[in-house]
Image (cartoon, rainbow, N blue to C red):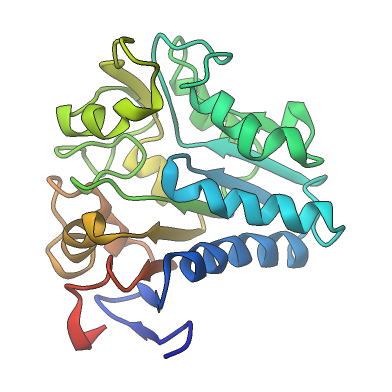
Length: 252
């Protein structure tokens, strides 16, 4: 079968794109960002980090280096950042974004935004000042988190400091040098902040995300699976490889 094996609507507005391979899913997500930047004068992006996004950003860097893509008019707002981790530390999301994208493209430094632990509420005001987020890129945690909105997050939550679930800390431990304590807290866009975006693009790859994808799309809207709040949004695209989509069955 080919990429875009199935694109159907299910559970209301969500569109699900199932790709044959992880590489195809990553390219599909990157292509949606490219297409948005190439066809829209207003270019406010919400960006995500994590291993799932590494090759998405690699593809965007490639298109930029080939002259096919510019970020000169783009503004970015990252979903989250660890508390107590300097932006210069390799484990910080600021460092991740510089390494994987910002240092390699023509986005102006003043147009790059991260939530700050000393003034999390300011982040929503900064987003509003840019007219809101046009395209929000999301991953999903094995426990259903989006951003660092862990199980129990509320629909009305705004950017704030949260306590990380132990499962999240364990999953992210490999990003920290051996012996370094994994942060207990982070600052994250809230569910309400995320859902204010005009368009959601969620990328999920690998069998470890299959259960969370099923709960987000098939289950009820449930604070114990924060990604399920996406069912309340009217423009959501979920991109999966076969392994991440394995529990969705033929109804997708």
